Length: 510
Image (cartoon, rainbow, N blue to C red; front, side):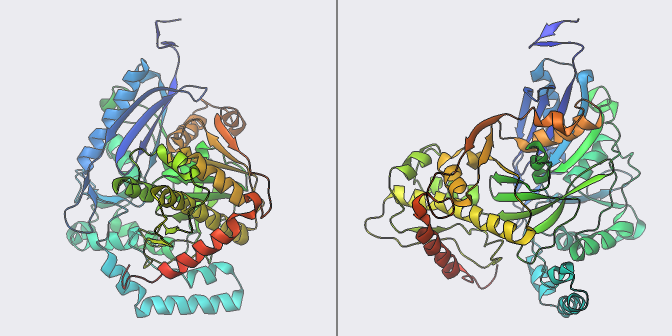
């Protein structure tokens, strides 16, 4: 049977999964029951070379990736040869460019938070070209009545779009682009290139692919063309080749980790921001209210689409409140909110980065409104927590109205979902049961699930559903008002929505 260590025999196998976040890289070793048997985490330093610019050092990220993989395997007590597959989940819209021959990057990773293309964004959004695109799309919508053309007539660039940040970077890479030696990729493709030491035939140069890809994905998000044959890591990196069988963006991975496999399944991730996703099946959703269609995952011939809405100020608001000493420990917020019967008429607008769907105003400001001499720290904390639940309701209502898909189940994850006050209020406002998992690192688990399915470690999605472990099921409290206890939140929600309107268009520029 082999030697025993940490409950394992040498013949047993596991799946590796790595999640590359904005500030840390985490790796977990999963067994067949989806239990974590080994872990390792390493912080990633963000670089701020100039105001508004946010970067990551590629070499530090790569070394951190290798370190956490080796550390997690060591922590599990297993050998690297017992790792049957590797899955990778990464943050979205962070990219770099590098030389095809040498693999050397031309610049640091440009983060999704970076604002260096803000002026280019404003220029493009006000350009004659964009006006012409909007006009043509409106005409096509009138002629065809297809909703996708109406959506295209409303879309605008934001600094988070890779396209214009990439255009900014390519200004200094003209020779490499002209010679066809410049490769472009987000973190997942760059890691894949490093893991295989450049042996990927599917990677295309900037000159041959980028113009088509960025324009096509901006105008038509239903475009899909990618390969799922990722090969194995070079044996010199970990001592043995490890099959790389899943590459996923963080929110899509979290959706899969929550086992939201069926049309109508909803996932709410509450971390730095809130990301609410609904499974729309084999058809992408067209939105005119700010939801955006995503490819959820592609396994074999199956392609599953999601519709996503987000609110940017979730964990950011709580962290800010802690920094100004409204409380010392985040765990206090639940008891503080429950220590008062209401927020004393105080409303908080969580728009540190503007307002996303359904208002879509990048010029909105964060604000407290309705302050009085009687207002205490507990009232302020309750107003902040309420605002997170209110934004959840806004996103959910938009999702229901636009997709018209019957909701099958709702699962929540992310660090903020540990707050019982937010979870219960969200449940009451939505009038739906919400399940909270026992473990919150869903992006890692989702990448592991997809990687394991690819090699037969797990046989089916039904098997994965049986591995789900819930910490608590939140049930709407009885009362009137569509799930709100005694309908008490109806006037509070109306006041908060009025506060949102007053915070809009505050800044002259986003």
